[in-house]
Length: 456
Image (tube, rainbow, N blue to C red; front, top):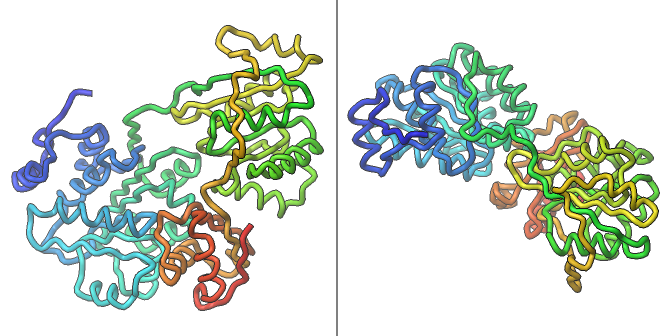
């Protein structure tokens, strides 16, 4: 894309002078594509990661149409964490230096409610906050969105991962239907597209780098003797050290046996198959999807419908029964432009069948090429905390996030995905913070109530 200057846009001279003074010379790709649409007051859904310049993209847009003399909330930016909200608010204040008296106020959980109440009474032009705390102010009639012109959902996929969908929808019920809605997300899962259709009008989609490309997967095949299969699997893991991996077995019994053998070798693994009770299945799926489990050992039927955004590796512990099954299995890795790895084991009995997979690109290698690392362990980044309360108890993601970042003192970055079901809630907590989080929630309260807490 040809480099573009901010001066090519319909911006005031005061804003252009300020952008130049803070080092904003040329637009990033996301700014070049999004800003003309945003300035034209169109709804936009944009794929943009941290560091892409997305904050300036929506910040310049909402500041351009801000009426400083109208001391009402004209823009609302929703963020998944307090840290991101603080970062966004800081950049908006920098971008707003071109004019006087622009008030940007942050409303986030994990901090005292009183000071926010006092600040709101003095009014604000722009609110940046987390869904739960913003909703709390709205319900108490402290915050008014009647004059809202621009709504921004920043890192929308992260907010959905953290279980904020209900809070977001409820916040929107307080906002005018006639408004500009900007949605920024690092990924485009189905839930994001569904959300866009429900809250945006004729949104223009922006992807500065297309992700609709064929999966880039390096495929390895190894002939393995039955007595050395487990060790070969461990050697694959120690040679490539994946963040997460699905290991496919052809039988339910083998899933159970293999997961236990891996656990004995200090490799965090869980089995998933059709004979499991639904609540056990939920526990396993939640842990794998929120990075609290590194290895999922599954049958094809059990893994059907399982959608993991970023899967490092797939291992066919047993040769699949058909080429179609093989393609379906390995297609789970290497998505969204990432590079994936796929490994397939075969033995003397199915040697001829395995050779049918040769196509010049797949690598048939000797197992001696794999490293043997003594004392190798595969420990996940997160641990799952279970709260014995859910939607039926009117428990929301914001309540859990507030309890953890408030009394427990955890950073938002130490909290991963939040899943809330009817009777239970699951929260992924960074390994190093799990004891602190568990102790605080056990001794404290959530929404003024005591809940049973345990670690999966």
